[in-house]
Image 1 (cartoon, helix red, strand yellow):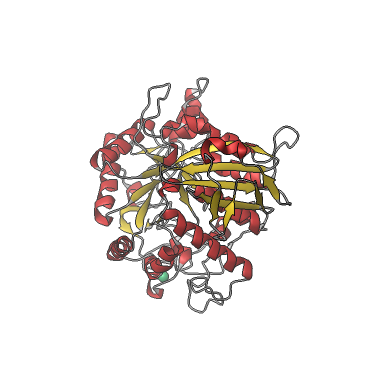
Image 2 (tube, helix red, strand yellow):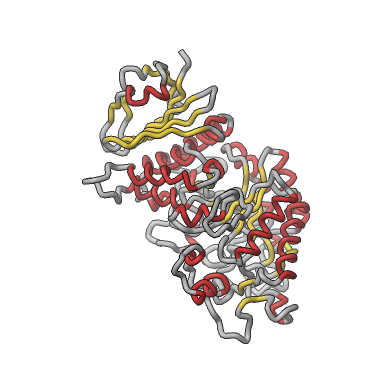
Length: 494
Ligand code: CA
């Protein structure tokens, strides 16, 4: 996942586009445009591939003709125009083709719920109900109370505000209940899938739109492209809220949409809280929160299709969430890349990009990737000027990602986990051919665990290879795990 404006500037001639409201580029202003673009991504696809990633998700690159603070791309003002500051449609197609040649899927970030207030049609709406609470109605914001969707006590008043209120004063709410709007958005999705030969769609603010429309949209796309992948953003820490949208879920109200992947905010939250220790140690040993959140997977139709992340562009950098602890950050990434689901890594995680001291400041969370601009004193693409911790993390993630993508017991295997004991959490990922054991030791001291507890899965195997050290160790006499480490062991057949 990356911010096109902040990743790399591959074309200085497009930094300022004629006719756009934002008139300048200013890298010293966190809310302004910094000049990154499609060419910058194309120029560094080899870096992304070599790191071991298999897909790229740039945040929206359609026209956002707004004032400052709209570099993020979620205030679209034309559904069929690439923002000229990112490049042309031909460059977008080139990005897709080059990525595909390198084995990278291109994910399109789409926004069905809202637009930017400067959208040309706001001056001449085709229908009175094209936009919810359309002017001259006074501004009416969403209450952001996503629980009302299933809440048996929820008022009609709150339900209407949730779904029809605007996401923000500058983001009018599109009315999916209008059949012409619904058709417009479905056709637009298909047009981009065909034009860019997309590998997937990431759908913003899922749940904020009318849910009958969301069903029509998601099922129309999946009917047309049965093997397609679409992920929805439902920012709730409650699996009962997130699972509602996944294809095949038997909801009490009979609702059944066609989205195959949902973002796993519940597991993200549990991971960080488990590592930072906000747990009740008297009753729940460390990692219980994580263990018990993963235990909620019974609510999902397909847990292996959940999208995992340590952070994203709307929350503090993972490194900051983990109090700038390098060892814990490695533990978190090891978990994300070995547990079930589809992992997503935010650009710059590999070099410990950080917004410490600037809590939730979007423009600083979405900082420039060093080396993406001419004259940058640090060049992370080439490893120049990085400190030892950054170099270590970059190498660590590269090894883990490249290993992961070739190991189906991780990408598509089954899961077995054991209740945490003494600050150590053990889980296995396996298929008929291979078994991987992951041991997470949160403590500040080495931990030795006996393996007889895991007989049902180890089945008498006596040795295993450590992914990170490549050592073969005897596991029959117990395993010693260094402090603050997640160890990945591939069991040998012996
Ligand atoms: Ca540029």
